[in-house]
Length: 571
Image (cartoon, rainbow, N blue to C red):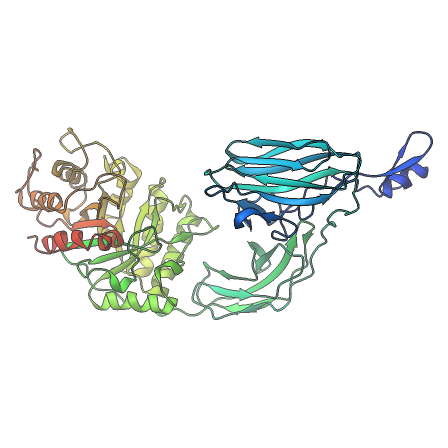
């Protein structure tokens, strides 16, 4: 990050009148009536904001690194990680003036952090702070000895504790002969801006690096700047077959350069992938992870054949409310987006439906206005056309607005047609009664809704349709809560039982596949029930869902091998 220089040296250059103004403007201070001049104090630390990596710094056992996040100011900071008997000590030797006082400060964040100085000639000094979630300034001071011309300043953490971050170091006092880092200047305008091969919703851009730049702003049609740190980016969320104009500017602590010459690029036309196969009467749904969280990493082609609906998890939100994009994670092993699209097409050719899931535990898309509803519908349809997805899955877990989500889904359905697959995965609390936003949405789009696979896990106890309380993990929990959805107005064919594929697939709520099979039999045939037994059988119940195909594969596909054939053999 850049160093805050507002307290390190005078910037005034105005004529204040007479010799006094000249002296101050020249970096001198007049002391007393005799006119004795001395140099103004400066920050004698070099690369104090880590804008130039670890230049001028040395860290023990390779424990430190310059990072772009977290940072306090500018574009860089130090991140150091204690390990074993190493406390992640990072040092710099600074030039100082003898018999002088210096104020040593730095901003820290994260684990235990120490700041100190040694070799001062008058004794070592240090200060520290325990864990700090926010940036916090550490400050101490020291006075140099009569012959001291250099001092070692340092930071370190504590053994076996969390990493710590440091930014904006200052050793403020008389110049010891080494001077201070020069003020940054506004970088020059980037050259070489070029567009790569476009898709129907994205344009890749690249440009030449600019000396002294710590970041870049990419402008689309002269507005909506996107900030990046490298010399390339992909602008997403665009409309198919549309021309856009792009410019790039370089930035650093001193400001922003003029915009580059404009480059025009047109997004590709879309090819209608055509309707997908019909979802079977009884279907098994599985979520495929577009990330690596310790479960078996899969390509779509690796997903067990028992799954009829595969939900690709997850779409990403953008800075435009309601808009979604899809970014294929390199961690899943695809060499190209085309390879992924080919897998989608192959699954569809095998009779499977592949949908894009929106939301999840950490994801959120805000749809709370007409504009955001339209943005969602347009961007979701663009993904369906670009990747061949059969539809969407709504897995929003941070609150929804039923009015505008309904508008968004109806707009999407109008674009995609009657073959669109629409699934939902609400939490148990979201479907306890018809007054919840999720339940209201499900009923409002009932005519275009494929299935609601409620998550019967990470829940705790809930009310069943008979008014009794049931604990998760039992047949009764599955059947009595499914009953609420059917009695509340959903068709049995729009109800599925969502459970984890293994004990590692969720924090709580895993049930043995036999319990899932018993619940399915209870709901469809009134057999194998627990203490709760529905007033009637619902033989058209859609089936079951699991999180995730990856955790299923980790457990040897035990869940899908047991539940899949049972679902497909329901009456």
